[in-house]
Image (tube, rainbow, N blue to C red; front, top):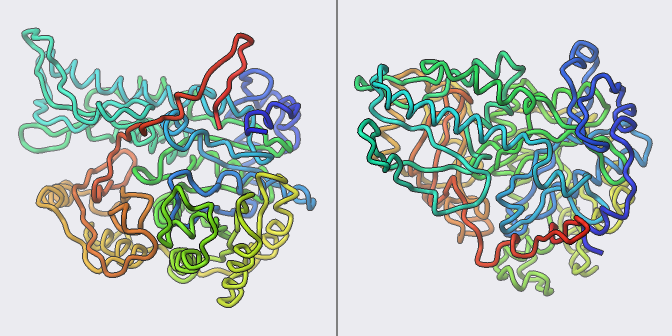
Length: 553
């Protein structure tokens, strides 16, 4: 059976029943049909004094193009914890339409470890990402309208980009204002995918609606003739943007196929953004359950680093344990096997690919000071010989691990790792950040590149250095860095797989996101508007005469 067929074979519970399991009443929900709801801020006063549960972060080794199943593992662990009598909840990101119609497909798990209703979640869900797109583009319209009507703020350089939640490489560079109307000023512009928009980051880092408005007002939209920043608040845009986001800021409640509550909210990518679900959702989940399973995008060098250095720092959080997902195919891929051959047994490549996993574990355990367990995500193409090899190699290095059969068995396939996690989260940690906010911008970048990635040298373009100087001059050097790079390599080159050593890391540019409160560092050839593959997933997605959706996986 396909993922969508498995999902449709399960009779879901009404969302009010799921909510009751975590002490949320119907009055504290805003319904979106029978199986989806937003959690009203009415709940905040009730839960604010409750003790926080244990936070488990799920991350991974460097992935293959189709990913290694972090969401599937996360779902099965939450289900597995309930199987052993523990109260658990998921706190996940919302899927972007870009991957759904592009390479990776949906992001609601797979097999018997899914969140549901999967078609709704993978498509428009409750409209959060569309609201973010609208708020982003409202600001763009207000900027150009201000310039059209006399430009009282003397805006000379616009840095704010429009956005769209689809992969469309044609929009990476565009010419705008070509109608030849007398007051319109043409210029080169560009689009980001919505999940890379600063508005998405702001929504995910805001504490409440007032904090949201403040952060929106702090967005730098451009610079005036004196080189001074012009803010969204100067255009009086933050109020109307917040109105568009008034519902989007509320977390969404759904369920797994085994009826575990799942709060799904916010969806920044980790290769081009900070890769974590919203602070509001995570903090709410911590008050509603004893064990909270969350995830960060792509490999630990991207998602986990940003979760720890950006989200945890800003929200004053820390994970009590980290699950690092590994697959046999990813080990062979990093060991030099082409992606089309990763299902074939190749013990030499498997052995060589272990270096990639070890570096991620070393970073999490010895650099960040966290408790780590490896989840071996078992596929039906894996042989017992391959699985035993990985298990034995991890035993040699005293790294705890568990074989997880999420896709085939759901929560039953994660009982062992769930049991181990209950013990692991009680162990002491020595959590530390990778850099201090007082470090210079280049020091922060250099520390992540050398300590986490393994770079020998960091190179900066003239444009990057000029922008760093500008950021320092206007007083924003004391914020975290959000490095945008390829997800396939520790380096900035997607072809340098496994564990490249002493490579040169190339910073192309830096962009200040004053509203979100971090600096985006663009490395190598990374693009903030992805493109579609030669055969996009969109070609196989359809709806039949009865309204049944097919092709989402």
